Image 1 (cartoon, rainbow, N blue to C red):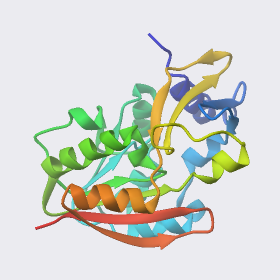
Image 2 (spheres, rainbow, N blue to C red):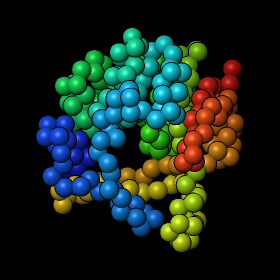
Image 3 (cartoon, one colour):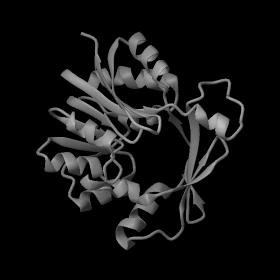
Image 4 (cartoon, rainbow, N blue to C red):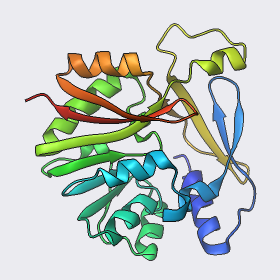
Length: 233
């Protein structure tokens, strides 16, 4: 069993206000990035414009997928929304409970069933959990089973094609936005996981093939963009 080093880092920061060592993120394109743990603990004043817009567009009963330590769920909760925070890390769920998130589900998104929501929210590139383009197709199919008649998806993603030029590496034979990551904290490594970034054309092509309506709502200066999708009626 791999340790939940992501959760351990979140816990240390929550309880001590600091980390024992840096939280590192190893990637399949060869980079080792130091993750700023503070980004998971942002409050309303720290939210970037893209996320603020997404939260403002939430409607009805909301599922915050990959909720982390609950920053987005707390924002919506304070605005009076019926929001459920979905997170696989038991440690992160415990932190959310201590921070006052009222409805918490420790579960894998793809195993969730027999529930319905008006908004499925995947922020901080939350749809990355799909892992691959085929996984994104599965995510869209599964999302239909969780959405109400007026349901919507809200998420952000980004075009990472620039990385291959920046690091001077050859593009893989598979889709270039499929990355493998691994967290490292306090000299322990977590389980490697796949993460997906979608360029807009690929996103739109897949969405149309799966019979979804796509709206690109916002783009920032860092090649990130905000999307609203709903199943085609």
